[in-house]
Structure formats: C-alpha cells, structure tokens
Amino acid sequence: MNPLSSPAGTSAADASAEPAAGAATAEAGVDVLNRRERKKRETRDALEAAALRLFAEKGYDETTVEEIAEAADVAVRTFFRYFQSKQHVLFGDVAHDVTGRLRAALDAQPAALAPVVAVGAALELLGLDSDDERRQILDRMRLLEKLPELAGTYHMIFQDLHDVIADYTADRIGAMPKDLHPQLLASAATGSIKAALLVFENAPDGRPISEVRAEAYELMTAGLHGVVR
Image 1 (tube, helix red, strand yellow):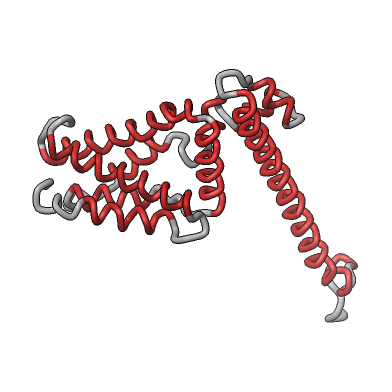
Image 2: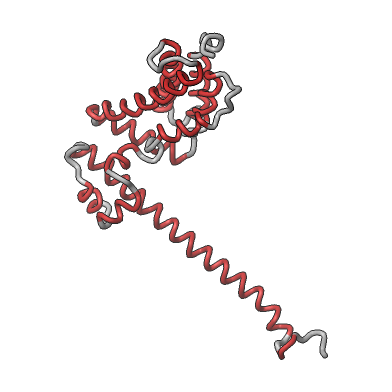
C-alpha cells in the first residue's frame, strides 16, 4: 500500500484537509456564539440606557416597563429576559441582590478570622472595579442628582447591607444585632462604601473603588480590632 494514501480509498490530501475543515467549522461556531453574545450585550445596554433616560425625564414611578421596552425597540418579554423588574434595572446588576452576595461572602469567611477582618475580606469579594461596574455606579449616581427622590430607594440598599453585617457580627460575638459593637462595625463597613463611592463620583478616573473603600474601612475600624472579637 502506498504510505501516502489512507484507508478506504481516501487520499492523503483529503485526510489532511479534514482537520483544517474541522478547525474552520469550530471557528465559525465560535464566531456565531460571539455575535450572539454581542447582540445580547447590545440589547441589555439599550434597555438600561432607555430606562435611565426615561427615569430622568419622566420620573421612576411614572415610567413603565412597556415604555422602556418600546424606547429600546424590543418586546416587553425581551425586557424580562434581562431584568427581573423595573427596580432591577434601576439598581443595575452591581447593586441587584448585593445583600445576598454579601451574606454569602460573609458565610464563606473562616471562623478563625476576627469579625473586623472577616467583614473586610467579604467586602473585597463584592468587587466594584470592573469597567462595567464602574459605569453602572456612575450612571446611577448621576441619576440620583437628577432625581433626589430616589435617594430613599438607594438608602434601603445600604440599610440592608448594614443589617446583614450587624447580624453576622452579633452571631460571631454572641451579642444582639442592635448592640453597640455589631452596630459600630456595620456602620464602619457601610460608611467605607459610601465614602469610596463619593470619592469615585468626584474623580471617576482616579483610584479603584475597592482600594479607596479598603483604606476607608481600615481607618474607620482602627479602634475596633481589639474590641469586636
């Protein structure tokens, strides 16, 4: 048999072409997948931009999901593929279910860590430094300037975070959530986030949010390390 020929009458050239054809097919599949992902991202961005614009123009309560979908030129059912509710698009992914993510991050901390250290480590896991997260935060802080009536809605997020940290700390040190030490640590933690966000709003191209928050947390908890344990 000719060593350059393959079994079943397939030529060597045909056999060598098969891997190349397979690679081309795989690349085409990846390209299709990438286009789909880009289309999803574009649709989501269009919905978010339409929602924030309508909130600023008409007010949050006065804007309907139907109006957001129409402004983004998609069906209402498409809106709900990307956002669970109007409140979800108001908060953005960066704040949506942030309390659940913080609770999970706290639960994942080793029991050997002191509460002050554990809370700081959990806050680090929340991120806030990707380009998309920074854009979401800045867009919503600018929206707050236009619609100060939304401040109460965003305040609820910080209150929920505060309560999660106070509950965690109380459980760790055998106290009640409304006792002084859990409240102090929770206030320091949420205060460090607020401070970092204000610094970011003033200088969005400056230091990473997480870096500023970590510095603020260290300063605000300096007197708690030997107390909350």
